[in-house]
Length: 213
Image (cartoon, rainbow, N blue to C red; front, side, top):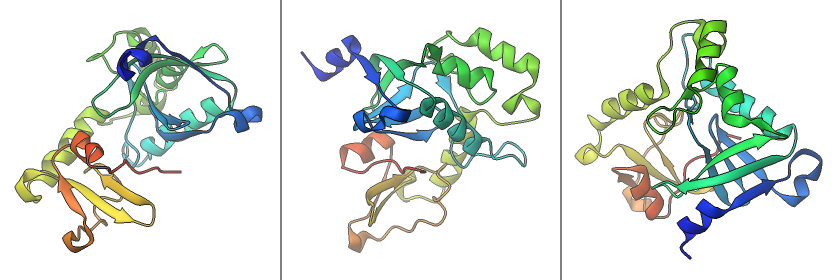
């Protein structure tokens, strides 16, 4: 059985809070978290990127903190659906029966990612009507934010490949153009650092995405 086939069939039961010793979880951003070495991407939602602002509000930080609070509140269970090209497990997850994707969207801290799923369109309309979270004012969708940052960075990157492969005490870490540390990161070829044209290229070469907490 291939790994991807195994993941499609698997149901992951994740203990958190008082049973943290049984499983270690770490939130990456508002739609992604790590579990015992597996990176879980919540199916059907797209949250503001860490470092993304909605006007004068740090909506990316707010989304991360909301997901962290939800995951820390009880027992998380995930049904693995697929594996994406970045090696992340795409999963439908809940905390004590509460759907994580639905909870993030109803809080106004994620969008329904209709490119891949229509599961949360109704929840998004609820948040929009209530004018909560990102719906309180003007904001840039996460996908438009990423596209804009990529286009801006690619103009000055070697061969239009803007992802920075940095080497530090934390290991080999890549920074996409929307990373809040992107502008401060310098690439030194003499240290083995390099540029990448895509996240999957960086991952295949042994680099990982940064962790924010």
